[in-house]
View 1 (cartoon, rainbow, N blue to C red):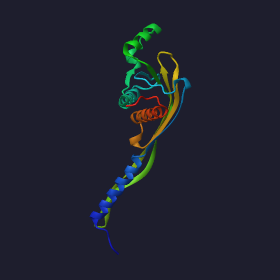
View 2: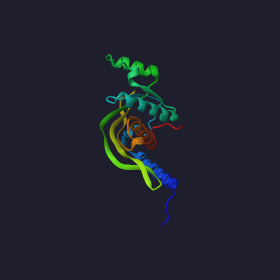
View 3: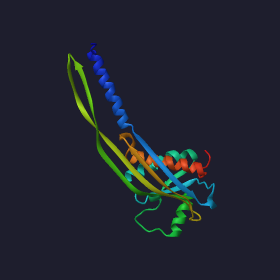
View 4: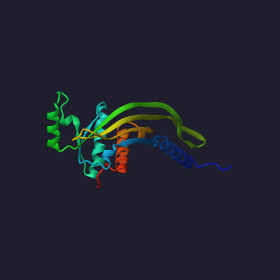
Length: 207
């Protein structure tokens, strides 16, 4: 019976371990979005938008703003953060709010509200990494942990002048695997899904 060379056995186990790990770690991120445009605002576009996150964490807001800037800048849209324009330490009158909007040339508002959210970590498969030398097999076992999360959002695009809701929608995103979970991945999926939908319905100006 033909025996496997010790070096070949080691390489085989090493490659098998690497491929299996990649399958577990590089899982997926899936996003669904459904929205509705007010018929009176078909084809509505904007150039400067103030973004508000009523109930998101600081970490998520940071990642989401970075992704919005990255994706909307391609369409020459300027992003402003609501809390930077309007200090949350005081009440703002309608007159004062209007003056700030005019000063910064804001023509639209974007409100992103976090709905349900959750994450889960469960034990996965046990992977073995070892080698066979002189008929003796040595190595160690590693248990892969399975990570998953989900988040849903309610989103509204508002025209500043009329205060009308131009577009409203719901977005749901879920992911699994270390590379596709967490605030950064969720924010990236949220932004990509939103931009794709706005392009489809004509709410983003041509580049």
